Image 1 (cartoon, one colour):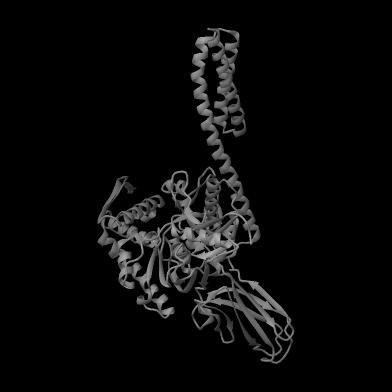
Image 2 (spheres, rainbow, N blue to C red; image 1 turned 60 degrees about the vertical axis):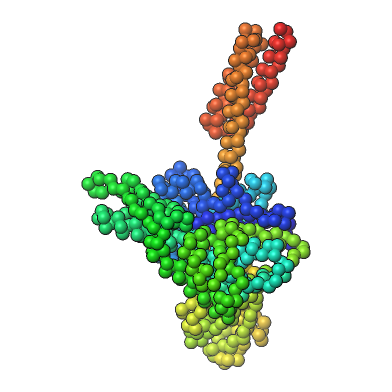
Length: 614
């Protein structure tokens, strides 16, 4: 049991959010501008500045190749994966191969892993929470798509650690949404709910049963490459094709142009959630070889948007059917449907969900904030000695090992409640073999090669004997976070070997420590910068006040030696204060503010003395 405040973080593909629980009620934390969500965007400038969130998004057009968005899609991914290849074709920043065959993002010659980019976003959210709460934050619950695999969960946990957080739990996003939905409803009758979560980059569907404070996930399914980014890409492609047809020019050759198209497509999609048509108007979009500037002006209707993207919506509905089939349920068994994620604001998405489940989805949750709220509730429950909420989640993938003949032996079926542990006894397949290599796999195919390799290890020291005589017990365990560990043991000798399964692209301890220090240094610099801005505001107010008082002092006691000395010193202090502001010298500025306030006091005394003498 740990003590201290726990924040809940929804680390999203497009936007992220942080929440806390106070006096039993969860709430989302807003930044100084009033925003409750922050764009999941990180940028570097040519001056070495690091920008996060809204600041990064504002400069994305002029710094497209060094502004990273949708990095969540790359987290835990191998360089040679199909997802990485698809990402390379749609983002302006450069994706390269990392030292562990992982996907890395190159920014001004430095290669960042997606987990490192995620840590920058998490560190910004932690700083926001510390500012709002005026206390140091150590602990967090971070959410991930339910269909994230072990490598992606590990990478997310690493991101939290690099952000200076101890991640108490990796929580599935739909489950977090269900926790927020069920908060305060523990006394209601048993309900079967479906959480339809269509966000910026991923889609999840989870089926849960709620009764007496027990949240039991029955089944989950999803697609880690289906979300708002794909809807936007369809609009971008439509704009590019239409422009090429009219002007015989390819807009894809300019990163800045593509960034303008992306922002326009995103805005058009938002607009069409509330109106029937919108105009995409991008003046001075591109200059041809002859030096002629071309504008883009297109009208996009809601009907056209649906025609461009309806197959994506239908993909999500097919996954819903798969989740129900896995739970041996039909839409009629679902009592309530919860919509989560910004894409569920699209009317066509709502219509498709209503049609499939045969009921209107619930409007009782905020689609952008509910996941963070649920994460905060889970964090609070982990801190409480007494807790009337029980969460039973499931593993989204089937796990097992490769056996003789290249087959896949299942040890843990998908949709098994976690934490869990399963074991199986195998025998040696070769005469007098003294070691056995265990290949840990994840997938649904009976052929091992068609499944994803999670990790491998060797059990040495087996008793030499004819094949089939030596028995080896293999035990799989999955934590509440969905993190997999595997152990193998020679039943006769007790010789044992085990691993916590780490993806081959897992960051080294040295890389993690380097990013921890980088985030810490940035947080300190950010805190210093914010303090400088605060002190500058105080100094400027003091200067203005002293300047006004100088006029009065000059008129009343300016001819006296004491008055002249005070005015001379005031001018010197004001000059030094301006110099400290220009040099961004915080210690000097604080010192000059103290001098300004002493000057104010002296001026007051001079004026009071003059008035009494009159």
